[in-house]
Image (cartoon, helix red, strand yellow):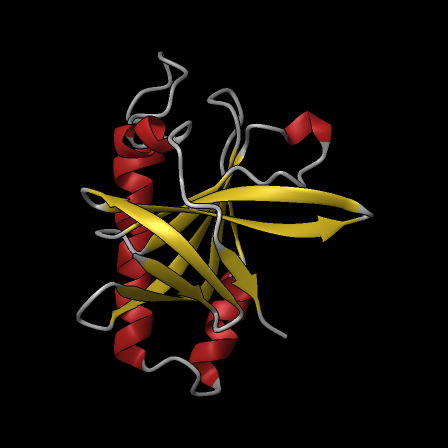
Amino acid sequence: MTVLHNGALRAAGVRQGDVVAYDWGFRLDGVDHVQRTFVLLAEHLQINQPVAFPPQQRGWWYCDLVSLEWDGRDLLRTRDLWIDVVVGPPDHPYRLLDLDDYADALADGRLAPEQAADGLRRVQRFLDRRLNRRHEAVRSWPDFPPAEVAELLTAELPQDWELFG
């Protein structure tokens, strides 16, 4: 299958259950990097462990709320919808980011009220299911990273992508 992200990246991916995984590359400070990214289809979240994070945050996760649009065959279009969550080790709190950008998009019409409500509900369900703990006695995330993602962390994926613009 093919993923088209923000109209700026096309990448060949693999679907396993409710997760699509794909690799893509970029050059930063003269170094080539390959980034593995996962789309959680049911949650409308795209997650990865940024290869460009500083050394003290290697292995942390960056989660983006995204819209999903299927072409009816094998093309998945994703678009970033501003709300982000940074997830470190279980002894660190997660960070919720860019709610102001989300509010601005709602206020200026880039997001319809129904889309905004859906996005907020999806983020809350993600937090409740995957990260929010009922009791602090055990320092672990309830369901993060998802098991489906853990299985794909080391899988062989197509190395076929193109950046536009």
